[in-house]
Length: 273
Length: 94
Image 1 (cartoon, rainbow over the protein chains, first blue to last red):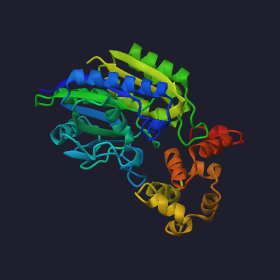
Image 2: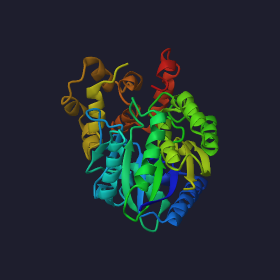
Image 3: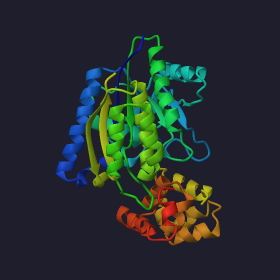
Image 4: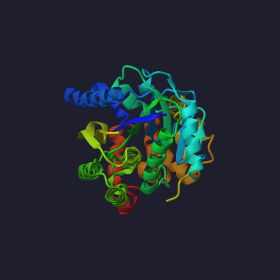
């Protein structure tokens, strides 16, 4: 049977790649150290497959057809299309059988995800994969979560998705090790009148709520304050899914830094499986 | 304010390789491919961030002005100026 070996989370600001050479050395050091620690923890968990949760930044989907949840079932995925991500691999291995299993478990449980046989993984998926510098990239099962365009999945539904992923891992008959990586958040505002604002108070309260673990207070906090913390903050949904998959306990913050250089309240964390 | 589909489509299409360069070289040629309203066309021609911001997803707006050649600093200054407008409070996190 498959084994759930850990849940992880990291921010994914595109400027981490685009403007890397413009950052102060201290900022580069913080980002490098924190991604490396995240990578060390993931490597120690020895996952064969990494379920990765991210927004799609208008790469695969447009207003014509905009899924709230889409599972990438391809045997491989295209690398990031952004020119500033050109040094990342152009093809990323997937796991069709396991991804199809997740989709089947979801449909059997009355969830209705979309599936895609061919996704391109933009900076949302690939910044953490690039900066962690893992010795070997696990197979990636990407799950696109709509964090970008209303209406988006409720926080309550994100908790349900996390529990469903745990169930899908536990019921997969193959002997593989599976981890989850939530990409995105914490607070940031992009293309809005508040662009560049970081709501550090929200981020600190959010981290405290993940540490406390309980579903109710975390849901209440996000329902009441996530919207006002900036449009990019909606990516915290991905952290909620990882949190629920880990049983809503065991959150361990690696680091949090409000980083104006990248316009994002950056967080790195893991959950003990 | 409602999403403007065709302006959104323009923003989305400008992500294609080479599309940004084509747009910067001959904006009118590209705009002619889209059934944009006179009001939206005027706002595009004026690089009117405040007028276009409520019409499109904020990420696409950012991408659009980058592809159109506006620096991040100028784009952000124009966005921040919106906070001083009477309607800014409603739009702050639209």
